[in-house]
Length: 217
Image 1 (cartoon, rainbow, N blue to C red):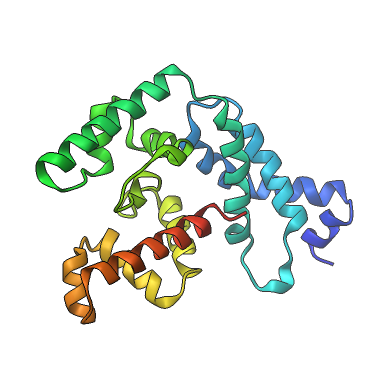
Image 2 (cartoon, rainbow, N blue to C red):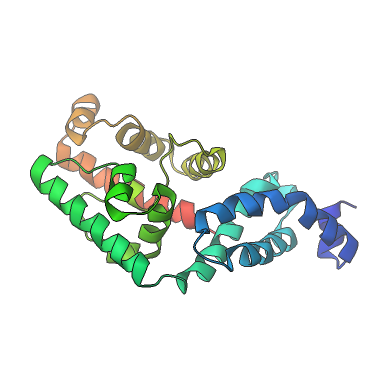
């Protein structure tokens, strides 16, 4: 009988051992929620939830299963931590974003938005994620609510690759071309021998599926 099965059967020693083994994962994820004092504690609860819900017979790695579960608990904990400072930072970031879109037609990178908002890129990603229901942008801003896949944090890259792996092949390719390679909708339309509006529709659907995969628990 595996440790996961023992923990799920109510063995406190097996559960304690697995929590200690995977606590570095919670610590790494909690850095994204530095402004929330309860994030780590809630993440530990999420880890226990993941241990109890994990099924080895699926063939899925435990970390792949646990990351979205732990993040889900942290998001709930962080929601109440957003105060006036956070709201002001989001307003500054969005005002600058709208200004640059009007002037240049190009959406500024998350690091540039964070500098204008006066917060770290990681904190701005989280703040935008927490308030993403208020975003109204025709083109959609995938990485206004997700981390930069070219960042230095291996765990964030892992999470993005994990979410991409759950998309249909064509949608995963489209997301990579648009947000990693930086190719325009016009360029992709020419490559696919279709129209820019068709690419726009496909991209919108791919983004929706990606964000659903990102937040899936």
